Image 1: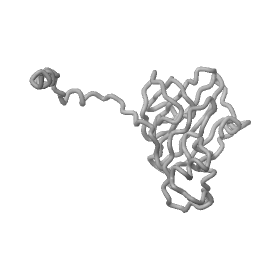
Image 2: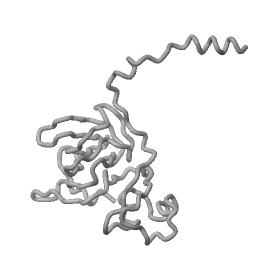
Image 3: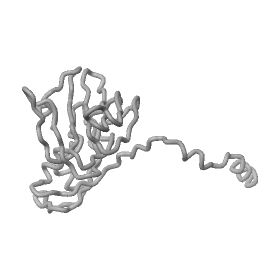
Length: 195
């Protein structure tokens, strides 16, 4: 009995280094991430931006007084519960980009922060150098809405991949993330659509 088990293991082909030489994209499993508290942050604001309520986030981080978070404190943020609404792709300083109306936002976030899917969708575009936008991902949400994530330092997805809300699509570099929500081809004011 023991010999059969050993022989069965021996017949398994050995792992070779050529399997690891392919450039297969690695997508981090979004079990959560960390956020460093900055001046002016409140637990309620942080929780709200990441799609949670403050009580849950406080309990998860063993915070007894939800009114007390300190600058530099690192909070664990789990992926948000999936919803049909949009969530902020990254937490940071938001600046509206306007023409005749607000059409998108720039979000200055700490370098290396994950950029997360604002809603579940299919990667329609994952371009390394989209003219004027740099590393850009466009998610098609299947109901006429698309979301645009541009100016990232790194992309973590390829065209055709299905991405769940809250999972990472890339990472922010020194430049701000440009984020847009479109209905068809028309940019929408994102503020009424975000929490």
